[in-house]
Image 1 (spheres, rainbow, N blue to C red):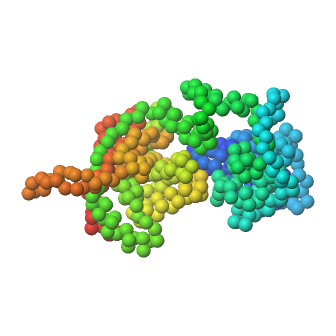
Image 2 (image 1 turned 90 degrees about the vertical axis):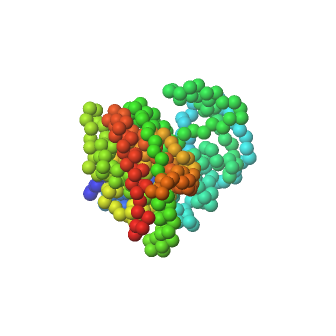
Image 3 (image 1 turned 60 degrees about the vertical axis):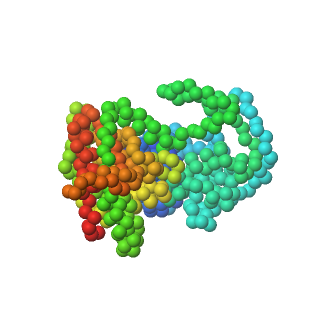
Length: 445
């Protein structure tokens, strides 16, 4: 019998492990080459891993929520059609009856909230929906067990790759939203009720009143919170501010944006223009493009610009423009637009958010004029771009000074004071402003 070992692949230079969040195939099921096999989560991103072989899934070597190291064998696939499926008594998969109940039954009394019966008995979910969505066997099983019909399932927003519905998505729907669509009996144990008012171990005790809404942090929000707290604990943050006159950039962009759209098929925003200036300044001051490892300073050769991007969920992700110093302004524009679209559509790959050496966050997109951004570890600096505003300003000329209307913005540069002193941090952000103010209004693109 020919067996293929499926190993957890490398998913970025700093990623050494991943959590198995959902198996998309059960032992005994056929698997096609490149068909999604398992969903995993790292501290950077959630992702589906495709099968590296075609055959029958013999064995899952890790259960849901277990952590695997890069290189570990996580599954075995047989390329023989008559393969015998192996079972692992120590790591048995849950039966369909066990799936909907995420908490084990206890002897404590339960509080029943009586609703009308749903009347769903023999619902059958197709593998592929009318809208093209693929539903994994596990998702279909849960839907059928919980009385969720095909039409309702197709309307759910999935958090998986290409919007695919994961086990987490459908269980969340069952727990929180099902009663809005299908009526039935919802059972809430007193321990669950009590947990709604418990505080986190490191935070203050907060007791909500009866009118407050309690919102559980999703996994990404918890990761962001932990990462931000860690950054503030590790790095003594200092922030320097500079105001830049970007009138030339505003006028230049207004003059070329229509032609650029016709030629390239996409918009040119201010972001790639600003990133171009930042890259130039990094070349002048390369010691802001470093990382700290113990008592060592790692000076980065590549200039990889992270671009903080808000997701529709309200969470934040930082896709990375690799080797930004090698890209033209057109190339930067296409990279910025492509990464922003993929982030919004949940189509970023693990490599898209790896390897950043310096980060930019556009607080101006929310109408903010400045900010004090938190460093994206293991980097040592981050630049916040404020909103571009029309303001009255003193203009110096050989014939005297006068008041005019100019387009200006604030740059807020936060840096790690362990390795970036005030002189370096201040000179860097001033250099960025200089490049912006010296922008050639007659430039071709």
